[in-house]
Figure 1 (cartoon, rainbow, N blue to C red):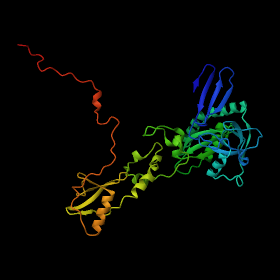
Figure 2 (figure 1 turned 30 degrees about the vertical axis):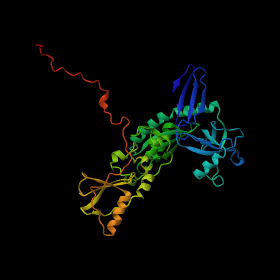
Figure 3 (figure 1 turned 45 degrees about the vertical axis):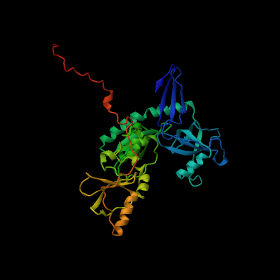
Figure 4 (figure 1 turned 180 degrees about the vertical axis):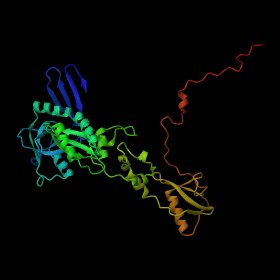
Length: 379
């Protein structure tokens, strides 16, 4: 939020908009900011018109909540407009994020069939009065969440209120909560209804979704993936870490949500493809000077390291994948190579730091050398 001469501008990244308030008249203006958060959509079919999709629009609300609506208002609606839409009780206010044939693609992706599932309606464009009421409801969300957490703690419920979303007309609120097990919150809903004087809806979310709502920086120094672009979370197991030869240290593998990091799945396909080209060495390779045991494998470079001492990593001898296959084939026919100690080290990509081999102490000012004759009287 920042102030200009006559206006105060506040950016609401949870809903993807910028709210401008005139300090003199108090008038509120809300504009759509497409690149404000991870739910940005690119209308790659812009300018193409099809009759079957002319009245279908994608409307987004807070965080990752979206929906497909049909324009029943008779007004001309376009992307970026604030519209009043149908809700289960009353009405809601959202921002149009997509229009045209690309909406049909989104419906197919989300499994929405308009013939079997009736779509909710867009009543009209939002008026200044609707926007002002919407902003009043949004202003209540933070205090409501803090009070809701206090009430849940006083009742001894093993749950955490992660976020609160008010409906556009201010008559209903969605409480997003996190719980490890089943929670009986029937009494909690009654207390919330008496405390806040609104209709209550409870919706459970996971730990990864909560981390995406809060945001933050990961150990890589970048914004959390769940807060930046991930909208659908896939299951992650320790098998993803094993196939990449990562240390099975829970503190290193866990993200800020306490679960396994989502980025563990990013390179699994590349490692599995590289592993498919590496032979499985179940027995030691036999040489004339003794058996050599497999100690470790560089999966991406395709290099296997062997040692004559099964319990030591001191003297390792690298072999390329092709050489290992040849030696295994020789062992099957009863043949043994001479020795592994004379094998040349295979060439591979070498990685150096940005400063090369320079020493970090080169930035220090050189020390002055003391004269050996200092303190001695000249004769």
